[in-house]
Length: 467
Image 1 (tube, rainbow, N blue to C red):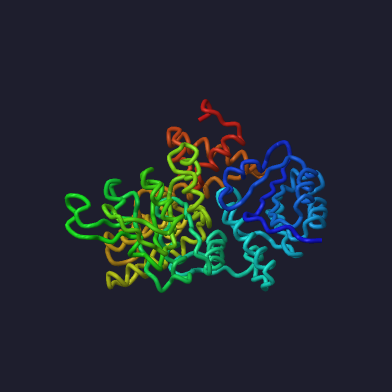
Image 2: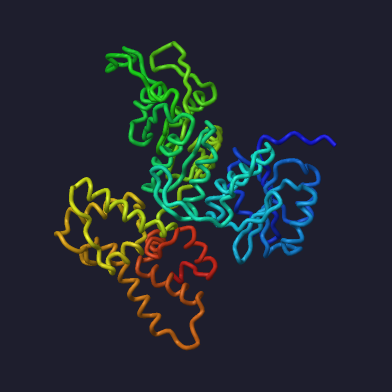
């Protein structure tokens, strides 16, 4: 029987129940890269697989909501669509069935990182279909790397990003990096460039939020002499300067709507005109964009063009905040202490155990940039000798206070123990009381994301009256 042509976008089949446990994933999957489908019954899912058994499928099913226990569905699905990749989630964590093998999933969590996960799964499926040897899958347990290019960290989330960057090194596809300010988005962009086929070309960075809208068109495309009052000479724009290399557009969400139209045209046609000019210039540039905004929400609010979002979001990368990968803090501290010592030609100071623990436990709302600034401050303000807890900024010392009080509470733990949910609920209430109900500050003090805090509030039935 003749096989169907491979679909241009992989199909993502989310198999749920009527409680809609996984339905929220639809909001996080980029429709520009995948075709997501949600069904509430396993038989519906199997019927979709029967209709297109040779399509590239990635199936996600929750073990808790499965009618046949997950394993039963997997057995039926792999008989119908043997090439499908099936991600089964459950109380002991997700595992992936792919290519006749099972892998323990040790990558990032679902939702915010779902595009990164799906891209990695899809890439592995495509390689096998091309007859190449399947590389060691990042979902298998293996020794994590501690750095990749200029990026430092050994957390599973970051190692997933390392693998994703390696998987696209032969591609010139556009990349969209999303994450909070200070998480190192430009470092990721530089690493993508330096590992790509364009590494011999220039890497040009432009912050779209730092330049007035009236000047931005000239920055991007250049201008001819006399195009406006102060245009005393012809000037090349970033698309000309970056030709043959990579153009990194930081804070892309701040780009004016009219300029979004011009940028979309350049990405589609690979050509542009300078301001005040009539000649058309060809360009060969890989665009990597970055933002700390939720671009999907901006699209829904009509603040960012949907077609430009899809054009930029071919390869999505979510860069998590430092508080979600605390195992990277020791490596980063060591790096910044060594780097600052070299710049100031001074030996790195010894840090007492109590101060070191406070630095490890702090939430870093300013992320890696804040950590680097704290290290530099210690060099500049502290006298020669060991760094004590008192030398740290007040907000970091406050973290140590919380840690000490938590240790005191554990000393008084009753023999019968205390349910974790009771402790967590009371901790959230006390923290919200401390922040006068400010959930952003409470999430920072708790070392969790605001989204997770809202989930916990809903889980424990905490209302405005409670907090």
